[in-house]
Image 1 (tube, each protein chain N blue to C red):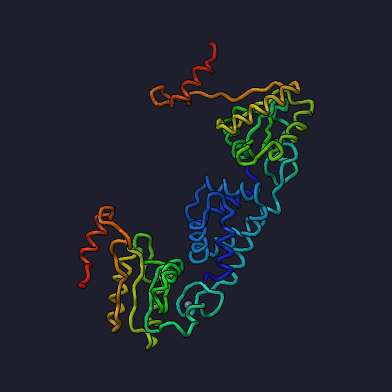
Image 2: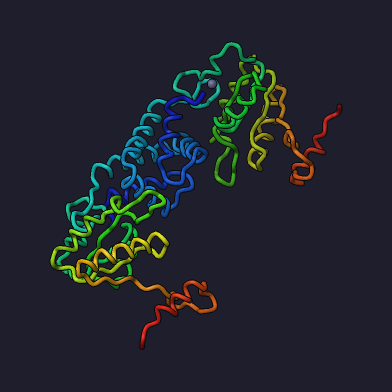
Length: 197
Length: 197
Ligand SMILES: [Zn+2]
Ligand SMILES: [Zn+2]
């Protein structure tokens, strides 16, 4: 009874992560009924992004050019390479202004349970990237989730076997954090990873 | 630092209801990285639906033809008109097989707090629809939310003033429902709306 083009739109919306049949239906009605202008804009933005975005040849983040702005910047310290899971993580690190090296974006993390293995993230590209003769230290900045930790562990072994210095960003209490409000796991980790003064 | 076509895609995704900056970003990466085929399909489905869907001239639901299948069916009882908020509500009523009349879809509900007034839903179209000389009873099947109730109240006054019989779908315990598990409001309503046997 649903017209087929409406049915197709509802089905098509379900490619979006976290969108089930109910919210896809709600989204379709919203687009058609309340915001056809936003809908056509969305269709064009998808087509434009797919046509124009590629991966930076050097760091694998999304870019419209062969080299992204950071990789093309001769001021960056080419001896340090920070490995992150996603482009958003790169932006978070960049916002700290505490890192002046270059990046490598895995575009994912190892997640055997979801069928994401070493071949599904950009590991071989990372290996050729670190073989440029300039990278001396790799800073692993994957998430502190089970999957991010497993990915860091795997990368560390692979990179150390190639004679590279490998480090991991620190875990601990947040700046301004009070022991009273820290979760026990983080506090335990802050104790284990204590630094000599 | 975000390439502009990626930025535009993230912004464009925010027209979807319930999608904020974080989930728009997650959706954009997912489309680009994991499902470009689904993404292009989504773009085409939006364009196709916008180009092909119109409102049924008679009942106002989405249709690809002048008249939807139900309105075009001469077997339906043209003396009864069931008024619902959205096309999904029409489908829910239709699935019961308990109603053989025709429908009218408001495509919304009165919601003064959200700025949705009488002009923003299809009230004037409903008034000309019920003036066809065939409709004798209007069954109000808007939701039992504050807004749906207010809409039903408003419609009832408007339709009764035009000499039409107006009814409201019943509230009460669900089929198979036990008093022990009913919420007090529903139980109270079931008492108030008790029927003589
Ligand atoms: Zn780059
Ligand atoms: Zn119709």
